[in-house]
Image (cartoon, rainbow, N blue to C red; front, top):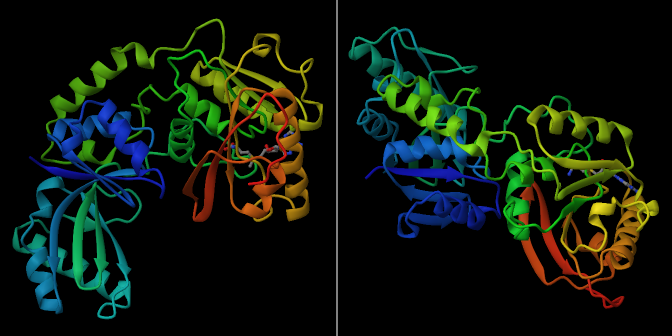
Length: 393
Ligand SMILES: C[S@@+](CC[C@H](N)C(=O)[O-])C[C@H]1O[C@@H](n2cnc3c(N)ncnc32)[C@H](O)[C@@H]1O
């Protein structure tokens, strides 16, 4: 059975594995690694995962794995796979090479040139001199990772990262990557099927809430996925999968009358942005402009009052937004408002450093490290007690 690899932001592999299991993959066919989840499945399942995963960044098809200490050896291994079979007449390919911890191959451009020329020569020998290099929109992207002298060569099935959902037109301050946001929501344990409210009172452009509302809906079927253009792929099968997906109720607009997803922000531009995305996508998200300091029982929507649920926050922090002092003040205010207005709730906060999170003056029951676009962060979970707690983290 073919083997595939779904990549994801660091820290999210375990929720990605759970997601793949929820698609019906056998847990024994899945292996979690630091960078994603390896899985064994028929090709059709790998196509379906591209359309359905909310957490993976890309789905790769590994094709070669070898150890090589000379340029000739690299070329002889590269020849073993027929890359031309994916590329239709006049098609193109691109090459991405990442060298990690290799004293032998320090300059990745050297490795890239070597493999590129080797591939072009092979194509010519096969009578496929029509295949050219194209970095922008290739028919096939070949990904090579070199670790010491170990080479792994994969095909990028997804093309553009799967986080490109296409709903965010303009980025406001420090938006989260969409698949990271989906993974964070999964980590909180919130589910669209339950009736627990989900609140982000610093929602920005609303990525966390939009991803929550779309957790069980397929990715856009309008954007292109690289494997759809591969020459040797059964196009009839792809059409069948897509039409089944668009017929499912998952893709229909969410019209439930009682929204359980709530977004607040002090910035009117955030309110405008999330209102637009939410309307465009037909999502039922309750949105209101409120500054944190004014967040109290009378400012919260009536439908929230008396309920207990989950708060999820990605507050601004010094490195990306505002100064550290401002960020500390914001954290202190978050802790104070949570304890005053969200008694009995759980709160999950994405925080880059303990210096900030200790301003909350609460003790975390949940801590998971995640990478937010290269910035090491921790998702901290708190149970807000009915009585104020001043214990420090
Ligand atoms: C890092 S952004 C959130 C980004 C969001 N998670 C996303 O992915 O789109 C932080 C948000 O907190 C909001 N904010 C900062 N201080 C606030 C306050 N005192 N009251 C309400 N919102 C606040 C900002 O307007 C900004 O939209």
